[in-house]
Image (tube, rainbow, N blue to C red; front, top):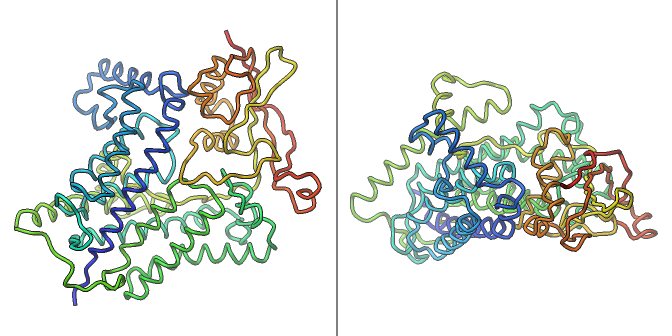
Length: 486
């Protein structure tokens, strides 16, 4: 009996709509502070430079491939907010099942447009995963005016296979890069002894898990590697093995979500596993599933599926093998295609925490009126005040707080966006100050701003009871020079 995946597709599109809704809503709350006119990396300035380059180099219509964004029309604050609000509205339509074959491509275009102009603030793997999922979702989305649960449409089998391939790469790639990196913490199974403390924004539960004995950390690390390296191959096996893969991966995502704030990554990753469950898994009678009506629609869907498959499968295979330094056959044929579609950011390799960070440097930003007395700017979510409990913030992603984590791992000179951020503090930009939890200067500009580097550690049970702190810290030195306003 031919297995169908209509129910899985229906539920997947609802969860995809929810993911887009959360992503656009989260971005709308911070878009102006990040890339608005008075933000850290103004999109309008970026597009002005792009127009100058196009005029100087005489780049024709290829500009739209090199920078595929609707911000060619405008990059003003109103337009940026409209892109976020428009994406939120489109996500609502997808959840309601209205014109899904039109809405899904528009959501992809909208999110891609913001990704291009937000640059560093959209450099996360879940942004790449959402773009790739969004373009593959076009293949499985039915051509109907209103998609209804009582009569779901079975997707093309090629679309199901594309989703299997994405799930395989997402899981297996995450395990493969950990071993290929040569990082000793993964090889000696101590990675999770550091992870809960050093990840970008831990949850409160991470503090408690960090206190568990080392043998449990080693066992958990071994379990993660086993799931990521072996479970993906079960997708190629029997129906029960695919169910096992879905259960293992969703369970892993649940544990990650409980101990770390990773925006919408866990929801999106888990939703992809729905394609490992056929309609019989939902207790659905085969007779309730319908196929495409007429002759034209199936042909159009098949052509779209074939076109996307021919392009994405070899390019994604090359991306996976390149990520671990293996190389791939036919690289001379695939590489030009990969370069051609690279600006679309929709065919990617995956693998979080290939090299585990074993210490937690943290940047504390301070302002002063006289260069003697310094007052700290408190961020909304990243560690600052040692007495403040780690937050629950996902599925919202505070992108400035995340970028501060990456900046602390590098050097001030290599992070030009951070200098821009400090300049906005010196100018007391209201949009940027709204990204913070508190402004010690009450909205007026300080004369000086500096950044100091600390090492943060989770407190232990004794210190927590005695001092009522979640973190302990020690000063490492200056991160940036003292900056002054005009």
